[in-house]
Image (cartoon, rainbow, N blue to C red; front, side):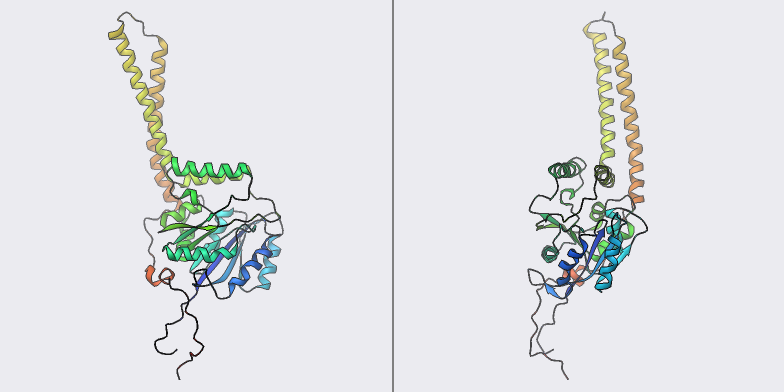
Length: 348
């Protein structure tokens, strides 16, 4: 290298994790789209990048995905099959792929062709421009699902973000880019009932989004049914913190206040408004019920707070996470690639 010539910038090494459930008809096309990015290329902003491995996590779906994975692995050196012992679901399969990855960055994407691998460079540019360790794809078009499912998804995310105060919920997407050491750490500590994106939010630094265009699903049926979606939502609620448990305490407190107010009203009516008025049995019954239910719910709420702390501990929420200096890692390399000088040659 001649004196004064800047050293070429190392490409950002990316691992792509694809949980596979019904990929028999879609995986080959997806790999063909990823193939051009497995050789050194540049992002839209000119930064060097390369997809060094694609981890296909077999989650025991109902089709012949296992056969397709084996065929693709025999054909391409960059494909790494990950075999699970049984069907665990999309998020556990994604965590298994993250734990097995070796790239500086991990990209997670679906098997059905909705996510365009050409968008990976844009996700990486956004991460480097904003110094973010986690970037979610933000669709610029409606998801290619039915109107009912899209509305339900938006409503569920609004409920979690607004009522349960789960920050970042509205941005959750299965197409995401995360700093490799963050993704692998999450995979190491997240419990079986932890919602992946909530677990990522526990330790990720800057979290942002990058615009993408979702494509139509290829020729395959969705693996999600109503029961699966409801289970998915409930896991997100339980993982989002103890806000819901505090609401139980608030409801109990309000019931207790109502009971006390009714007691005061009955006493005031008996003592001051009409001294001869009869205190009917329904009033006493309502007082007992409201005050008793209120006290019970409040007590349960207090107990639930302690349970919530233990639940979060069981899910693996860490008190801290030690990482390397961001300036010495991939976040520190924000410069575009330096074109090779054809006159450069090694010094004798």
